[in-house]
Length: 201
Image (tube, rainbow, N blue to C red; front, side, top):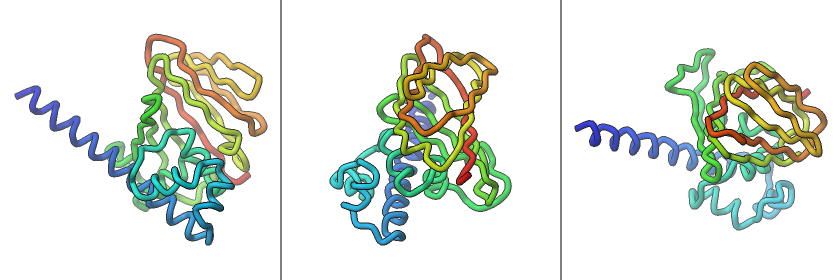
């Protein structure tokens, strides 16, 4: 009975993740078409191949965090904004159960969009980074926005261009000028941190 119940829970979580991935693909298509861009134009702006964009838009792949960051940056959006536009309902209150959760298929990094959609100039995101995980993010993801990283528990290595930051519980870092970055968990336990994104400064 317990195993059956766990199987049903895992299946439901998998369905939710797959559904979000499909809605993200649809959102990418809407953002692209809304700008009058062809697949080739988006590929040029984002550095993501035309074939991969087409595959994502039609639900044929599970995108990595790096790929989503490139596409969002090409649209002038943060990854948080792109995911929120794909999933979130309007309103000032977003219950925990309704906060969009997206898992990077490459690293196992789990991203929860916490803040409700609004005209406030910030997004709040919770990240769980598994032991040994590494998530690269392109400089394109940081153009026209500022970000803070606040470690809630665990240890995070954040490589910003040529600078390495070692962050422990409670530490908060303001990101500098746009640069290629890497989030790394070099420990044997999960790291939880919050990302505060200030939009369009």
